Image 1 (tube, one colour):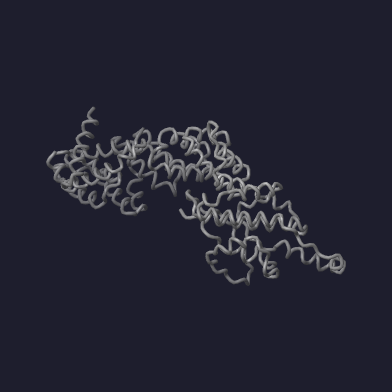
Image 2 (image 1 turned 90 degrees about the vertical axis):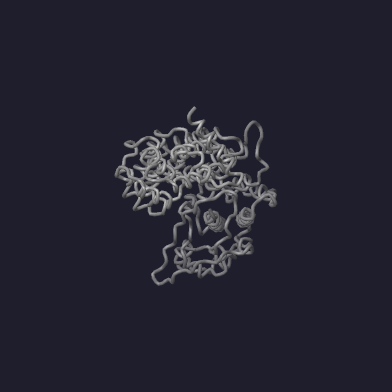
Length: 482
């Protein structure tokens, strides 16, 4: 009841402030204490975490009002420990570091609270090393819960890179101290990414399930989606398709479709054919009989993983039916490249004449085998393809760099390709001798089935060349902007 009274009071102030009067005048006239304003701010943020996007403007206005009140606060205000804790929580809720530092300098309080203030100022000013050095010895469970939850969240964020296991522990503390709040939403969101980076599939699945169950409609859920898709790709050997389906089944139909589309594209990029086929099928399947077979993205991504398969005629037919007008510019470039690769697969392979074969020197043929095995992609293939401008951001794909010869000069960065470059993705090599001197540049995720192909067999050689060009598409997708 008390919380509702405080937030009702704050909402009244917001309405007055919206009429054009200075926020500072209202907070002083009403006599609200800093801790009351900060508590109102937290309640607004918790509504936002639950999906109330209409509360976002109220959050901004409350931050402004709270900032004005704290800048006007004097030493007497901070004699109440609740007000000083409110100052610290305000700082960790997106507050102004200048206000926190100035207000803390006027306060007389215990050394630990002053140390937390100093650490928060360092954190807000972009000095993570200094912040963690100050905050690391302070146990969030040893301070009052309203402060400890935020402190644990900040420490978890600071420790995520260098000490991920410790970060997961303090993020759990943040959730324990402040369940059902924006703190828990942020802690779960961070935990998903950290667990994936750690290879902890069980923790990843649990945190993802909890996030989808409680915070799917948070305005920050797009950040969760980024981490979730990346985690599914990273942990594809440990996350079963059934578990993935269990998690996505808690989403609404549209969000589920978008997640599967993103997974399908990333899986195709990394050569994870089974996962790409599964995700594409789920994206097309839809729910309650409402399929998405007409979604051009689903058709494009599902075709991408099978563009060099034995069903190439079917794939080409599917690609030909895609409505280009419904694709982004980047996906249209991808469609062009995929069609070029598919065309290369079925293109007739020129065979050597009988007289030429009989006249060939067997010794020279044997000597040429290593060079043939080291054949590289053509100059057109080596050029950077255009960035993909899809609706969903992607992480860069990991590409295994070729080891240059000892006397080879360093390669200069390739310029962005023009649309003509994409159209010519399947063009034959222009300089066979130059190619023979370069090893093939393949991504680290290149399909292992390439080793089953014989580069001396004309059909297999065409398949290898097509797959190398498909790898260029992978690199194009991997370079998509955030």
